Image (tube, rainbow over all chains, first blue to last red; front, top):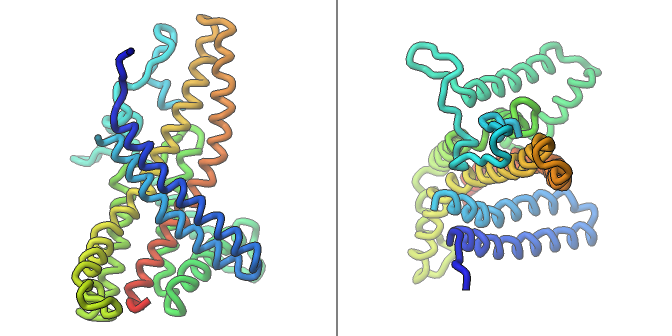
Length: 70
Length: 269
């Protein structure tokens, strides 16, 4: 078996990206559903969607920063 | 892309990565100095962004007209977007008080982010942690100050001893809320902007830079330089994507600042 090379931080970043990926999918999917059902409330749904994305995405980005400082 | 190749002698070696990725974001030597102050490239870009923002606002609103010109319309829509949608839409009717702060923040971050895509600059100002951290410290001071001045000490007690939670759990929820309010909020606000722009700058540098290096070394490696073509194409795709990210992150930073201020103005929500 060949020697395994690379940084464990890479695996850590990969793991950190899984949860937010699923989370952003759920957020955007439900926001699209809300906009499709009530087009007149699309503005509110869009603002809230961006907020939700920003909060969810923070976890992945913290993982990304930790990858560099690890 | 220019940054990656400027220190690189393509005649000698085809692939020359910087020894440390941090070098892509550092400009140590000063362009010029006034006394003990060194003006590096980053500092000059800060002043350039400031002049651009102030100049754009000045020229758009120097002589207010009933029917504004094209530039005036763009600036007016930006200002009214921040004022009506972000400030008043999030904070409420008294949100217009915070609109100047949010507008300054939005425009500075927008210009700083778009430096990433500007030819011959190619450096996002907000990918140096000092700048987003400073901006988020401003937001932090404002929302903590507003919370205390509007609600007095009940602002703090409302966070660490929440009335809407059963008594046995109040200390735990209060602890989590305290850490989230006073530690995590400013850090995540800064890190979100910083990391997005660092990731974007790295991707653009890697894709466009390596594509360009393959093209530049066509004399040495012949037709194999065509490998650079898909990389360059993918880089151009990312370029468009990064434009969206730059605008969106400026919007999200402003929106989150407004949301944090709103939770201080009306703490019960």
